[in-house]
Image 1 (tube, helix red, strand yellow):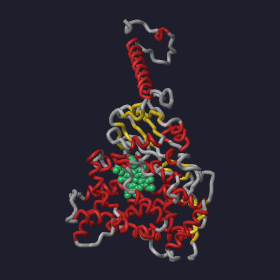
Image 2 (image 1 turned 135 degrees about the horizontal axis):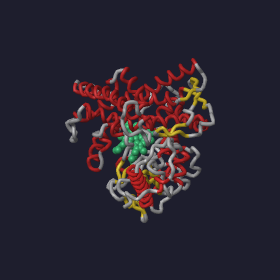
Image 3 (image 1 turned 180 degrees about the vertical axis):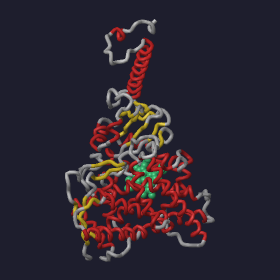
Image 4 (image 1 turned 60 degrees about the horizontal axis):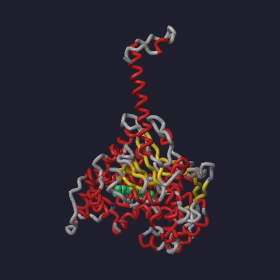
Amino acid sequence: MPTSTPLPLIDIPIPSFIPRISSQHATWLCTSAALVGALLILEQSVYRYKKKHLPGSTWTIPIIGKFADSMKPTMEGYMAQWNSGALSVVSVFNIFIVMASSNEYSRKILNSPSHAEPCLVNSAKSILMPDNWVFLNGKAHIEYRRTLNALFTRKALSIYISIQDTIARQHFRRWLADAAKDPSPKPIMKTARNLNMHTSVRVFCGNHIPEEGLIEVSEKYWDITRALQLVNFPLALPGTNVWKAIQARKAAFKWLEMAAAKAKIAMANGAEPECMLDEWVKVLRDPAYKGRNDFSDREMAMVVFSFLFASQDAMSSGLIYGFQHLADHPEILAKIREEQYRVRGNDVDKPMTLEMLENMPYLRAFVKESLRVKPPVTMVPYKATKPFPISDDYTVPANSIVIPSFYNSLHDPSVFPDHDTLTPERWLDPDSSANTNPKNYLVFGSGPHRCIGIEYATMNMGLVLATASVLMDWEHHLTPESDKVQIIATLFPKDGCLLKLTPRPKP
Ligand code: HEM
């Protein structure tokens, strides 16, 4: 019997300082080793079976897979993966991941709700709360989202734009005052993030949140960004990123719920809407409105929080690269300014309106192009809910993660000649390949989960950069890291974009 057969190991002379292993122990050790060995072989076999002919490592590192790479993602690493094939695979902690890099496959994933649905990073459910609308799918998601469309109508956007204008000017005054005290170039990572957070909180909640609430939400938000990394320690133990993010969400919720309650009171008292929550309550109270109208303060807070969650990092990334691109391309900045002075009639104090923005095609083309060259979101994880026949010769196994990536679509040389060059003009010619291939523009995704905040996001980027261009001059202090990308949920210049700001004389 194998259990009673003396094992060669036991016959080897053992140094006296090593405790002698009894035959029972040895059997136990051998069985365990055999079991571990069998599991490791099984792990490799399952990986190879799922991988089939797709590019990717032939073997996966036992247990952890590509965990080390995913802890410190780099653009170069992602690009190597995307360029290895239109579909390629990796495995992290035995989670089988199919990466799609071509326009065809990326769009197919985004537009196949019966086979794949968004799967935010593991930590998202504990941060956003499991009953947040962003986790809905199918019909329930479509219906919920329809009610939220009321928050992004032209009427709603015209309320938001005046708040955005006021806040951008306040921040630029502060930026210039700080630069006057210390004129050395400073990274705009933090200042641009603060501007965005301030804008979002006031657009979403108006003055229903006091200044101290705004400060608390802004300061704690970085904890949420950190917990959004693709890979994080999964348990929310005290001190971990996810735990800190949950504390930040609790603090934000306190203020957001209060704001929802105050908006309801203000609208019941006949006030005019001054922010998104007001506008939402007003729509719900309209006798002509036929949809659901029983939104609790908590549910409204969850929606507003989902918008903050979805927008803060992407908007900051877009804005920071907007400043960097303009500084590095003075000829483009000059054209933006020319358009600004013309549309504003040389009055740089004139607040921006939707009508003015509509008369600034060059600005809009620049925003679109800047987001194309450096898309804030390069990919969105989805999960295959059942076997997903994505191509003629490959079916994504059920429960795998399947990640459409946008970078190759946005840098496809056949659609965007000179794809790495920032050329706003490509959007001004209706017959350009950029305009005749709108399906390649995946900056905001595609399909049922396509970004709901597109109009608001592009309006905000345009307004901030345009207003900055007439109030300030900025010089980019180049470092060896300026053109390198760091990925903190979204893309940022590795050196944080160091700018030297000075006030710009009025025309
Ligand atoms: C430059 C800024 C932004 C970028 C690049 C961006 C990009 C994206 C992308 C790529 C998606 C996933 C789409 C998909 O799966 O097909 C998304 C979803 C979403 N975005 Fe944005 N976004 C931005 C700003 C905003 C803003 C300002 C808001 C809210 C005010 C917002 C709210 C959302 C929401 C709620 C979703 C999920 C929609 C759903 O599941 O139905 N985003 N965004």
